[in-house]
Structure formats: C-alpha cells, structure tokens
Image (cartoon, rainbow, N blue to C red):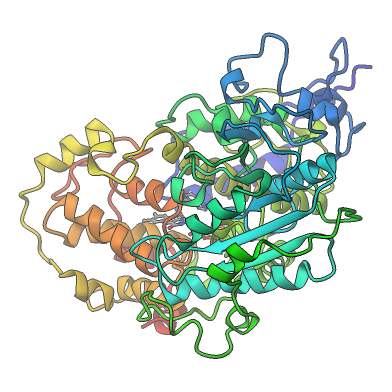
Length: 579
Ligand SMILES: Cc1cc2nc3c(=O)[nH]c(=O)nc-3n(C[C@H](O)[C@H](O)[C@H](O)COP(=O)(O)OP(=O)(O)OC[C@H]3O[C@@H](n4cnc5c(N)ncnc54)[C@H](O)[C@@H]3O)c2cc1C
C-alpha cells in the first residue's frame, strides 16, 4: 500500500511560516543561517516489506506499544551506519523478556547473574521517576523473568562541591512522591540520603552482594550513572536520557545543524520503542519483604519527615545551606503539572513569546528533565497527542532544517528543537569527551580569536562575589542573576546574555568560563547538567561560527548587549520583578 501524504503548505500558511520565522529569527541569537523553504515533504510509506518502523508510521503499531519488533528493530542484519553498533548492545547471559531496545542497554559489570539471589535491584540515579522509564521497566522485566522481588533504591549522594539545600530539597520532593507511589505496589522502595560521602556506594555494594542482578541508569556524566566499576553481579545501565539513545551517535557533533540532520535520519528507528507509560501498572511480583538488616542498619532509609521537608533533617546535612530551597517544587507530580500547564497554556504562542522575559512563556521543564522527574518521551507523547500527530507526518528528507521535519505546528517544532536537538546535543558532547567543561575543548577558531583579544582593556570588571550578588552597573543582567540566585532558574534568552556579559567583564576568557560554571552550577536547579556545559560553551563559541565585525574582548565570538535585548524584547516587568 503506497500512502503518500506528501504535501506542500498552502501559500497562506507559507506566508505565515515565513513571517513567524522572520520574527523569531530576528530575536534568536542562536539562529543558524538557513535558506527559508516552505516545502514540507512527507515520508512515502511504500516499503516493500513492512518493517516495525513502517508499521509504526502507518499507525499499525501505537507509539507507546510494547512490541518486540521495536527491540529487534535495533539489530538489523548488517546494521546501518547510524544504528547502534554491536559493542554497545547488552549481552545478557539470561533470556530476558523485555521490550527495552538493546541500543539503550549497556553492560556495567560483566559477571554472571545470580538467579538464586534475593531480589532484583534497581539503583535509581538519573531517571528519578516511576513513569516512562526504560530502566524501571527493564528492572521489572528482570524481576518478572526471574520471579523475584524488586527493590528500587534511590540514593541522594552528597556528591559534588555544589550540593546545596536547593537541589537537595528538589530531589527530596521527588523521593517523597516515590515513597507515596510505591506504597501499594508489589515492589520495595528505599530512599537513602547520604550523611557522609561514600555511604551510597557502600550501600550499593552490600545490596549488590545479595542481588540477582543490578539495573541502573546510564548517563554521559559518570556521577549520575550506575558506577562502571566491578559489582559482584551482572549489572546493566539503561539509557532513558532522551529520544535518541546517547550511544547511537558515533561521533561528536560540532554544529546543531549536523546533529539535527543525524536525528532526522535516526529518530524514526528509535521513536517507536518508547518506554511504557506506567511500568508499575498491573504489576505482579513476589512480595518485596525487607532488605537485609546488615545494609539497613548501617544505612537506614530516609525518614518520611525529611522527604516531606518537616523537622531539621535537611538543615543537618553537610551541604551548602546558603543556597536556599527554591519556591519551585520538585518531583514527578510537580513535573507533570508544569508540563501540562505549559502544553495547555503557553505552548501555542511559544514561537513568538519564548524570547520575551516578561511573557515567561517557556516550559520551565529543565530542572525536571535534569533530575529525570519527567521523561522527554512523556513530553513528546503529550505534545504530539494534543496535536493529533501521527508518525506518517515525519518529513522524508533529513535536511537538518529546524522547521518542517516533524510535521507539527511551528511552536511545537520550535519547542522540540530545544528539547530534542539542543538538549540531546549536550548529551552528545558529554558522552564523547571527558573535557566537556574545560577551556581547551572549545573550537580552535574560538580559542584563537579569544586569545587575540585576551589583553583588550575591559571597561568594567567585577569580582565573583559582586557577580553572585547581582551588583553590576547593568540592571537587566542583575535581574537575571537575581532570578538565578533566588529562584534557581534564569530566563532562557537572558541566560545567553548573562553568559556573554560574564565574558565581557572577566579578566580572561578562561576566568569567564570558570565563573559561568561556578555561578550556574552553584545556583541553578538544572545545573551540573550536560546542557550546563554545552550552554556555557556556546557563550564562548561552541556550536557557533565566527561573526563580524570583530569586536574588543569578543573577537569573532557572537556578541550580545543588554541594550539591544531591551530594545527587541519585553523585559521591563522582569527587570522590576528581579531587581
Ligand atoms: C550560559 C548558559 C547556561 C546554561 N545552563 C544550563 C543548565 O545548567 N541546565 C540546562 O538544562 N540548560 C542550560 N542551558 C540551556 C537553556 O538555557 C535551558 O535549558 C533553558 O533555559 C531551560 O528553560 P526551559 O525549560 O523553560 O526551556 P524551553 O524553552 O521550554 O525548552 C525546553 C527544553 O529544551 C532544552 N533546552 C532549551 N534550550 C536549550 C539550550 N539552549 N541548550 C540545551 N537544551 C536546551 C531544556 O531541556 C528545556 O527544558 C544553558 C544555556 C546557556 C546559554
């Protein structure tokens, strides 16, 4: 059956597209140089033998279907260059009945599973959620196959030097949600809050010693991933980070355009095998019983009061209490509420309003995506559901262009370009290089031009404390910094300006990089994310090209000013609110 839904937008829509694109492009400093093109081709669905991909595109397999086809689809005979390589695949020594795609599985410890062990352990560190989670789904699959109890342990480690009351509170909100959610489920949930560094790892080791297998999260930043060091039992890390399995990209992408083109070629293979919306639904497993006393007496579960924010539990933790909790709540429930509010209220005008700080029309989802409280798959599903989308609207040509490929409204496409292209580009960066936060990882041209201007006189320079306190001569910048310091977020557009000014006001570009990382990761709820380093790198030329005219300090690096921003965008309410 050949169903060609290929269409060209009617002229009126074409004019609207151009008009909106022009408006949007004028105010988007990350705009790429692309030729406008209103022709949107759609994929012809005339394949000789239906594959899972074509069945999905024809609507014969629902988006969130549990299809073995979807998993097997990741292992085509011969494979194509952009499909995952066999070395990335799990080599599970037991036949596990699972629909989680092999491209998302990674062996962390290659030791035999112990079917006689006491339980299957899911160590939850990156995808901190109970819905739309490949890792939880996979752990359930193991427990079912072995007919063993399932324990989910969610550690809150002290971790990095930026651990603070703000991010701890946000994660504790999520743990409180989970404690409630698991109350009536046949799986055990154990929230664990570290009081001294190293406790979480010791807990993992002691539980792994009696587990059948350990399932954990995969993540390009090792601190969020299941430790890839030797556990005493078979352990696998599962990638639930984004729409594209992180390891499916076999190289580092230097431009968003190239990564987008790669996504347009690859995503149709990966989209059908979405995670189950609710892997705990109708779950039947042996009762979890109790975790071994040796482990629970040394590492007791967090008290419910601490999870709920009652008592002094949080104040007693050895973390930075100067960065106080934000008014923004964390957790799966808050994430879902935020997602639905955005999709119902501000998604439609996203394309025209997202850059205006006064409109505050972006999704606000980055902290939830960062902690895994919401899945990119769920957001994608909810969004496409509202637009009555079906996969046969995907464009045929992988052109790398931002518009037209998804076959969705302009606003939805603009939003997906952020949530998929730009977000997953950051994951690509951190998965391909360990020095993602180092100055020498910036493109050669950027380091060269910055070096040529390193000694240029600076009209203003500020110390880190002055910056942190939002005490500069620039009231718009101060407002952005104040929002960051008090609320833990910063308006999307102003985040770019914020970074550019730090470059302008620092003694050297290296110092600017250190300060951006310090301020971003100290205060932002979504800090210490792959996108922290791709975003900060962007300020210094990553993913960008040289711009003229060459300017003092910036050289050929793209330049932004508060005056231009205030002229182009609505900022006055924002400025007053955060002064
Ligand atoms: C200097 C600088 C520092 C940054 N630090 C971080 C950070 O610590 N953590 C973080 O998640 N993002 C960071 N970003 C990227 C971006 O600013 C935020 O993701 C965005 O502001 C989040 O707001 P939102 O959820 O309302 O975005 P929306 O516009 O609603 O976008 C939806 C989602 O797309 C992703 N996204 C949006 N813009 C970008 C972008 N430019 N790059 C990558 N992903 C994007 C985010 O996951 C976001 O939640 C930084 C950007 C810059 C320039």
